[in-house]
Length: 251
Image (cartoon, rainbow, N blue to C red; front, side):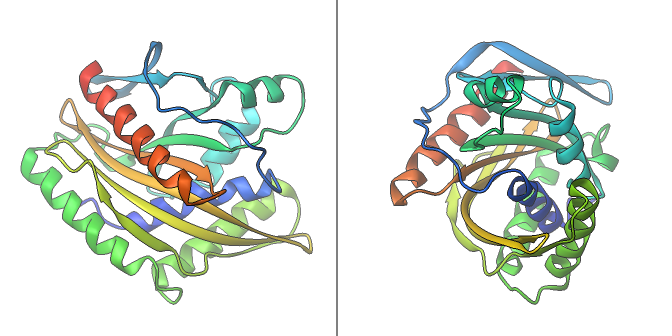
């Protein structure tokens, strides 16, 4: 099996947030430490432990609206597993207020690969496919990207009961980091334009996408941060590196 069509995962993982918020509030986001709390996911006959980053909570099991939105905007071939949001954002949701989504995460898996034994050679091939797809993703005329825009427009229009259009613009690939035998991460910058019911907004977002091979399974790990300045790049890379390494250590 090939881990292909990653652009679908990249696109669908990001866009839902623009239907929820207009602009994020300022938050100090610290690099994560392995927390005593964690979640477990069943992938075939393997149980994968996912540590909860310090200062975060797993949100999809707490808030139906979060689970519904992440699930609806997931790539058709993926299963959404977990969503981590800032504890302060979860408290806002508990109070009935809007979350800021200053920084948040998602973990997904290729549905057909939930029980697949992923060898080191397959992980290497998956990373090479990620590199190839990442090169194509910035092209605004890429058929795969255009198809995902339409998929997300339909999903968000149904979720919000408002006609929604999306333009990914031209994403920027800002480089690879934390490349190893069992983990590989990319950093991207996106300026996504969303028109919802005639109200238009463009939000700059940083995103890291990681492949993590754990217990011979492969998961997709996404971390997002609303961009305030160039100073946001390094903290996001540190966060992603520490968190994905903690997954490997926990299993």
